[in-house]
Image 1 (tube, rainbow, N blue to C red):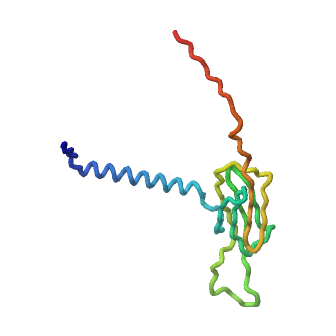
Image 2: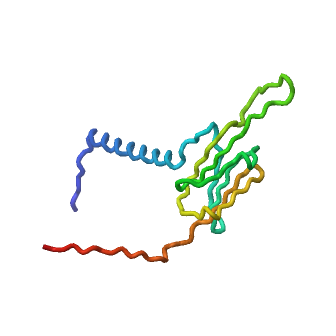
Length: 156
């Protein structure tokens, strides 16, 4: 029976391994940051994304907003939801807030769409403080074959 002995790990090797693991962690965190870019506004609504009945559905919480204060667009493989919640002043003369926790102002929310979608068939509805956007995916194109001509290299 052969016994295989591994060389003792050195401090230098341990530090190199730790450095590599930290670098990989930072790269993963950077990818997370890119998937949901920072908001251009003061607040950001919560969003759920799911697939149901062959359609991609995006639901954003926008309580207190009306349809005229919302804008939904598609840009660079992202669904972009923008809007504004205007500040409401308390009724009555001399009234002032003691606590104000509901966010006010503009927001922009980008939702990355990793699958190709049919933007022309998208629908958006606002009901009960929820903005629901449904988008059908593009038809499967895998059945089509694209021929790529192979160039022949001349031999000397």
